[in-house]
Amino acid sequence: MNRPGSVPTGLGEAAESPRLPSPHIAADSNGSPDVDNHLLEKAELLARISEKLQPEPNDATPAMHQGPWEEELEPDSDQVPSPTTLRMKWQEEEEGLRLVCGEMAYQVVEKSAALGALESTLEERQSRLAALEARVAQLQEARAQQTRHLDAQRALNVAQRAAYEALRAQAGLQEAALRRHEEEARDLLEWLVQRKARAAAERNLRNERHERAKQARMSLELKKAAKRTVSISESPNTVGDGIREMAETVTLTAEPLSLETEAGEKWKRPFRSASATSLTLSRCVDVVKGLLDFKKRRGHSVGGAPEQRYQSIPVCVAVQPPTQVQDVLNAHLSEVNAVCFGPNSSLLATGGADRFIHLWNVVGGRLEANQTLEGAGGSITSVDFDPSGSQILAATYNQAAQLWKVGEAQSKETLSGHTDKVTAAKFKLTRHQAVTGSRDRTVKEWDLGRAYCSRTINVLSYCNDVVCGDHVIISGHNDQKIRFWDSRGPCCTQVIPVQGRVTSLNLSHDQLHLLSCSRDNTLKVIDLRVSNIRQVFRADGFKCGSDWTKAVFSPDRSYALAGSWDGALYVWDVDTGKLEGSLRGPHCTAVNAVAWCYSGSHVVSVDQARKVVLWH
Image (cartoon, rainbow, N blue to C red; front, side, top):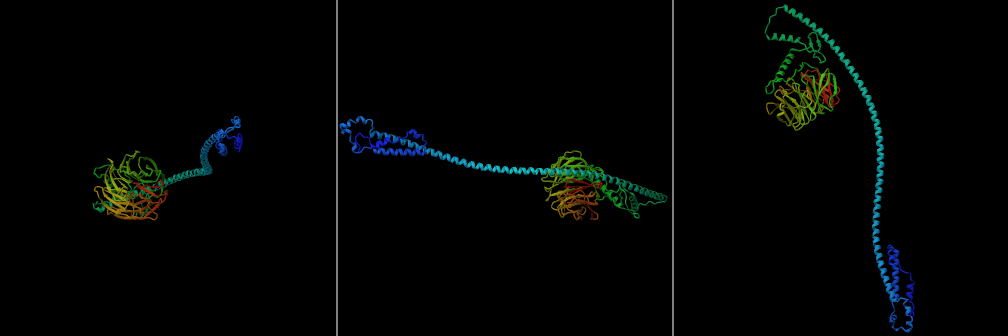
């Protein structure tokens, strides 16, 4: 027990204990864990000191019992604080420390939350940085690949350029060789023409000598006959004999003669390269009768009004098949579908898929460009001259037929009304009427003066070609049938079935025979007088190249001509039905159409490789 006036042991320890940091110092510690632990230790130490400073029960007696000796010590008691004062002081400090500790704990929580947010942001940015680094690596790899590919392409371009230059040099050499060969061919052709001219002159001289000798013999016979007395009889036999004798003396001086036998004086049918043709009596009668009938038919329209419908048409007595090529042209930008001679045989029209119609003059065995007709709305599928040769009618793929006037480049009229491709367009026997056929299963008659459709014929099948007679329209169809229509009536008058889709129709000049070409690779001659198939032409190797392959009669109906898929031309003799021969020349693809001029001197063929070939 301590003596009165002595300092308590616990108080001395408290006095000797280190001084606690102030609240301001604790606030500057930024809430570190070491400072917090130190503060907690100090708080526990203060609590223990407070417990020790509490008065014991015996010490709680008031100071009234102090003796006089104690009063002597009172002045000194002011220097040492009382336990109550110390306890209150320490309680105040403890409360301040608790406030500081709470404030520090709140700051610790806030700082911990902020630290967690910063750590999550750091992790997110680190993951994004890793992704970007991976993307950068990928792009760098792609860039390296593109660089390698670019280098390879550059090397390939260099190689291709070198190859192109080599090919260009080779093409230049080949063009030079081609020009040299063309010059050689031109020289050779000139030499052949000169030699042929000399040979023709020699033949003409021999023919003149023969003719003079024959005239001398005839003059001698006439002189002998004049010395005899002759009785004139009107009997038909006598007249016929006289006509026969006159016919035997008739000759055409355009070609040389070919004597087959001296005893019977039988003349061969000459080639066109020869220059004379002998007429028998029956042939003369047929030709004159045909010309008279032709003029009679052409001299009256369907309405009966007389009209001049044609120019002077060359008379063809006898022809021979073509034997050689005279001219070859790449006439169009794409395949050529149609070809037609004008009535005077010197003007030629070709139409193709490039939507142009080219007119050509046949001069000296050459094709010379005359004019180009423009304005077609689609590929040309058919061309036809009117009887006067002054207008051209064309069928096109733009669902219409178009009319041009020779000498004018632009289309004069468009015949619209079909709903599908127009496959055929032909003039009737007058220049003011026409007929068209289409894939819309209709055949239409047109009044060209008013550009008006005067009649529409509905058919059950596609129409591939049409031809026109005096009062009949003949159409060939995809259902392997040829149909006949009376232009004065509404109904079909006759149907002739054929084996295969009909690709073309051609009517002979006497309008007695019809030539059809079909996809069964045959040509058929139909006798219109009895309406049946008279002959069927076939040949090994002949094959139709398309649904619009055209075949034609020769002007005298002696031959039938058609082009094949392999570029060859096949000729049949209509009288015997035998294959006359095949011609192989510049065509390397399918021949689409052929045309034989009215004079019989030239044939033109066109193909799918843009070529137009003139044959003689």
